[in-house]
Length: 581
Image 1 (cartoon, rainbow, N blue to C red):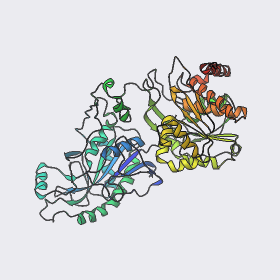
Image 2: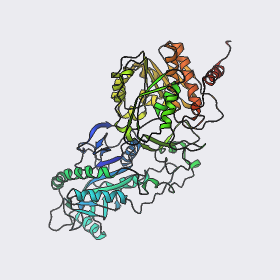
Image 3: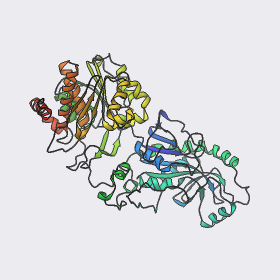
Image 4: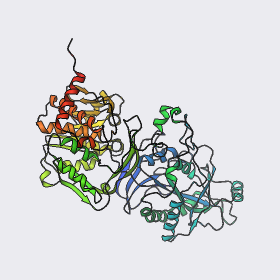
């Protein structure tokens, strides 16, 4: 099962706010989207104990005008990282006498006067109409207003934000007409941002900081850039203080309806949506637009899972396994009992106060790819693997899918094993590529799926990809291809193993980790690291994966015995055996 270090709170910084002070454990992540690149790399870090993703709306150095900002890419990128709530920090002009420069406004409404911007994700054969009567998440807006008051700001809660195209400020005639409309503040960036956030089912609220009276004010000169910038700089420190204060309050379950915005919004029948559009918008069409949770064959909750559990259980049918992992105080004792019963050494398992990592997802009849509905990192978020003394001289080492920097720290804590294999995912390929490439120099076998291989190798052709990846370090690349089997690329050959034909596939979650467990377990049991042994190990990996998908969680592996494993290995051999001509 893939895990994602998902930021919980997204912050979009407007004019003047190009970085977020106070972040720790900082990582700069470049996120690819179907809509092009976002404004800049997203800065991910911890703020007051909350995982935060910060994006400079105009890019560092203020490179993008309001009309040039790729709003769709910005919102999509935050959603892709796992953000659920977005705070938009925005510089605005005041349209009312009572809203002075330096005041804070938390608007509840928007009026759109933009002219050149794409305002929806839904196009190319897919129509959706989300409700936008209340475009701001009231729960988030209320907490933002309360945090601003705690920071000593003069706060105005409610009102209308008028969004103009820009980049020019208003003419006096425009400003006077806008005043007659009854709007409260004027800016250039919150639309279509708020609309897109609603379509992405994200909570959204604006922290608007007044920099000036718009040019309507008879006692003030026409707005100049210098005047705006001077006030803007004074507002930056206040905005950062407010974000630090509000961040701890924007955690936990969302009590609002923002996460269900697409429940009744999509009008196009699913079978009529073009495949390319479905693929392009699969991230957005996940939680509420699907009728079924789980797989088409059923649903289960609070079941044992995780890379470590799947890998260790599969490998335990071949060899003793020592496990390094972390769980919370809520982790059921019955699961630990099962792992011990399988002979798995749990000396390296840390049990910490708090909740265990949880993942919730679903599969359609196309079972090759899961849609994540919810990720709760819990104790896993601060996990730093510590290797017990008894574990420091392993014969073989498998580095399951976590941050490549953490994988490298594990490798540094042990005596060099005879064989090191690892797994990774697109999140690390895109966001921690340098660290991953550095890790691969010390890895013998890389086990990833075909999508990850193409992303890492930068080419759609897997043969070319294999050459590129192997040149980076691993002598062997194994590409898992789901229902199409597995490919192994080594120095002198390419080996292919089919997927085992099954009448019943209930749950593919964990199949990749069971493949890795079967592969490594077999090699450890024989001590043979020859090319032929690797080929047999690939088949044993496929055997274990084929058992795993027959039931939910680890249920099928609980009932397994080695005779069944041997029998299926022989069946695999018969699948591909043919006489020479």
